[in-house]
Image (cartoon, rainbow, N blue to C red; front, top):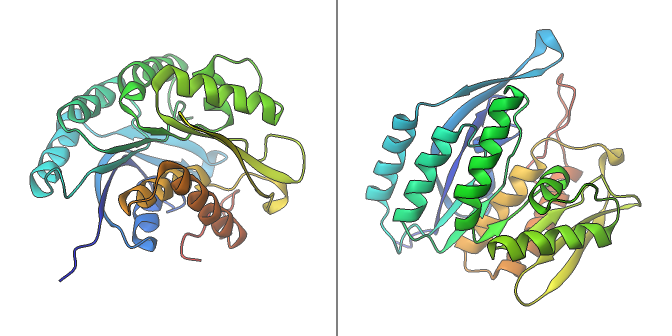
Length: 269
């Protein structure tokens, strides 16, 4: 019997199914990749208070326990791709970084979630610093959004594709990872522009802006998970970036609406 490729996501839960670990596992499955999960936190929205975020971290020992059994069940050579999403606290980041240093994954896809709106500003800043110093240097592929690209590159603004390219280049030079910096709806024009940078090439990936220029929840999680799935299937980083961009575009086109004040990507399209 043929064994499917495997990928691990280390991420948080988002109860509506529109983001986080739920999106990662759906994306893996849609690509024919077997997904496993180490849960880092639980994020929910508060419908009674303008759908604000509620953030509950998982205890570091519980995260370590999850990763221990995953590593034991699927050794190197069987599980070589990991996608990292919402970590949420310095203690969680330290735990995850320790596992990444011990296990030499071929593909470490980092969706550098820098801010959770349910955190106090001081805690969020501590988390950002821990992520950039402990996990970013271990990544092989990074997918920052517009805000994250500014934070990681040290740029005060990104308003053009040239500035997005400069940000992606700076991030690549700082950590050595392939970078897919997402312009999304934040750059002017009718196209959603992302910039890919690695040691060999700089490419602009284009797709029509969909959804009236409004952000769709889960797009970033879906993109990073699709990159991870493609890498697990044997794609090169640039091939993975192109395929993930197309996958997300189709998912946004078929987006799901609800009583929440945002639409979500539909991976099943």
